[in-house]
Each structure stands twice: as structure tokens, then as C-alpha cells.
Length: 496
Image (cartoon, rainbow, N blue to C red; front, top):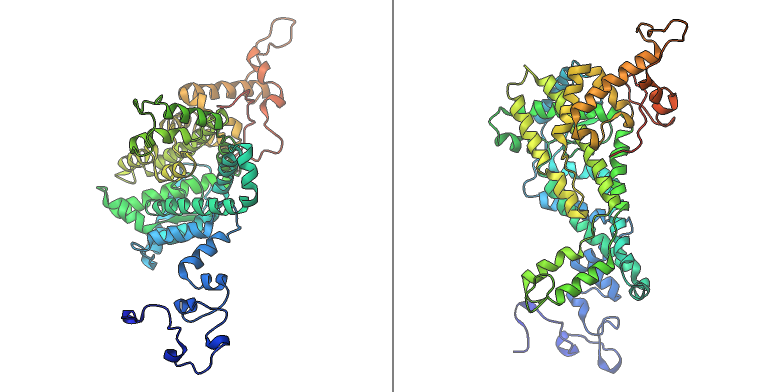
């Protein structure tokens, strides 16, 4: 049987059986650009190999991926991957959900007016589906992740021996595009998982929506409320309170966004890959020095491979540890302040506020969705480990000094508690009173004249001498301040 069933196979090359009347040279007809008849596989189209490859869906997509020149992460692939993973459970938002979210955010802003001096930061209210969350937050993720990915690729290249780097030179562009494809696939998968869990635009601790936009994700809110013993509208209002509080902070503390971004980028700058340590570890593994038994490293043994994997991970450098402490502290202060003002606003208004607050604290402190996202990419965790300590600072500041003094700490980054201050939060709160007393005596704001000895000048407390100069109290001249009346920042010799 010469013909394949169902018409599969190449076209018959016999001109008589093809019905060709003409023929080419030597009696052979057909397309000279397609001497082997491969064009039939692509619908009879001829052309160059590149044109033929472009007509095959698989190779056309591969060609598109390899032509990416937009940076270290292929964001087209990331977007497609994330949306593809969400397509099965996608639910578009409705007008009723938009109306309910707008009303919840309006009421939340009204309640917050009574507990904080920071004015509203909401200019418009939005509801996003999971797919819309991915599309609308991509610019923020691009600004955060591109420097991390670029540094990882650079560190891996630097870790290569000089001979390997010289050999890789001619194909560096191809390697960079392949790296963009791999990062894009990872980011897309991570964002897809993240979009299934986030409740609002600030749920990960970072402001991801455009400035002034307060956002709720109704589909995820419904799933979150289903696992709680509280009414859905109460859960929506509680999440709206957190979103509105975060919007106030990020809108009226202009340096806060940049400080968070700088901390992430500082972590990226510290990425190093110790090639010698990797080579030494692999040598120990091959000789059985890593607990591999008498046989040493066995590439056919999955457990042996698992023991080898930690050697290939970059070790956290002192620079990264410092940046991570700074990031964790700042995230904890943001989360702690939000917890404190939301608790004050919801008190006596939402019956389940305390239980919902504890649920949110556990959700963030034990590793929320953002932690898996960044840990998947570069090992950076956005976990506010000091959340409870930070919340203690803000609550104690309000109790002892009032809400205005609490919020005034946001007027300059040097006024905020450091990671060392969070070790003893009550000591930090007590020091604020000492500083206020010293400044009041120095400026004479409503305080009696200090006692004098007969014939001598008034005595000045020695404690004011260290803070007496304006240069010791003031931060950098160009440092922006928030909209609350600011107290001059105290000098810091070192920050945790």
C-alpha cells in the first residue's frame, strides 16, 4: 500500500499521478523553492525556512519569545502565563460589586477620619477581577523585579570562569533572552498564584495600584469570607478599612514608596555567587563529604541531587542581611500602623473586628502570598516578622502621647523606630516623652524658667546639650515630610 490513510504524507512526486502536464528540467515539476515538498505540511506555502518556521504555531511562539528585548524579564510571557493560569476560574466584576466596594471604602474613610490626622488618600475606587489585578499591577512589579533579575543574571555570569566567559561572549545575547524567558515563566506562575489570593491593592504590603486608586478584588474577598464565621459585608468593610488606611499612609508620606523600593533594590545589589564555595562543595559531595555515604555523589540518586542543590544557591551577604532587616522593619511599621488605626476605627462598630484582625496578622506573619512570590524569584521574603512589636509601638504611642504624636513619627524616616527599637518597644515610647520635654525646655514652650543660683546664669539640663544644635536634630534638607506638622528628626548614628 503506497498511500497513507486519511491523506497524511507528502504529496506524490510522480508528475503523471499528480496530473502535472508540464515539468521542469529533467521532467520534474513542482516548486523549485520547495524541492522536497515540505510546503504541503504548511498548507502548501513555500518560502524560506524562516518563513516556514514562522507559520508553525509552536515555532512562531518560540521565535516571538526569543525576539524579546524589553529587559531581563520577558513580561509578555509573564503576563500570558499568569492570565492563562487564571482563565479557568476567571469571574468578571459586576456593577453590584463595584457599588458595594465603593460604599465600603467611603464608609471606611469616614471612620478613619476620627482616628488619624492623615487625610484620605483615595481619589477613586475600583474593583478588579483576578486578570485585571495582574494587568494593572504589572508596572509596579516591573519596577521591583527587573533590577533583581538583572542582578541575578549578572552574578551568574560573573561566577563563570574566565575561559567560560570568553566562550559565552558571542552568544551572550541569546543567553540573555533565554534568561528573560525563564524569569518570565517564573514571574507569570508566581503572579498567577498571587492573583488568586490578594484582597486589595496593598495586601502584599507594597502599593501596587496607581496612586490614589483604592482597589478591592471581589472574587477573592468572597472566597476569603467563606472560610470565616463572619458576614460577607463585614469582611468587605474590614478589608476596605485596611485598604483606606494604607492609601492614607502611602499618599501623605511621600518618601515611603521609595524607601520600600530602595530596600528591595539594596537586597538585589548584595547578591553574590561564590564560585569557589560551589566548586568546593561539589568536590566534597563527589567524595562523600556531604553525608552521601561511601559512594559519594550519585547523579542517579534523587536524594543525592537534593543534597547538592543548596550548594548552588547564592549565600546571603551582609549587605543583603542589612537590607532585609531594613525592609522587614519598614513593612512591619506599615502593617503595625494600619492594624492600630483600623482597630481604633472599627472598635464598637464591627463586632468581629478583633477576630478579623488576628486572622489578618496570622495571614501576613506566617507567610502571605507575597512571600512565596519573591521567595520563588530571588529568595527575598516580604514577611513583616516584627509586626506585633511594631503594633505595640504604635498603640503605646497613641495611649501615652495621642494620635497626633503617633502619626508625626511618619514626618521623617529618621523618627521611625529601628529594628533595635522594636526589641524594646516601650523604651522607645518612653524616650519620645524625654525628647519632648528636652525640646520644650530648650525652646521655652510654656515651661517655667529653670532654677538659678544667686549671681549665676540659669542652669541648662545637661541632657539638652547633646540635642541642642539644630544640625543634630534635623535630617537632610531635601528630605520630604508628610502632611502632618513635623517635629525635627533626631540624629541617628546607625540604623538597624
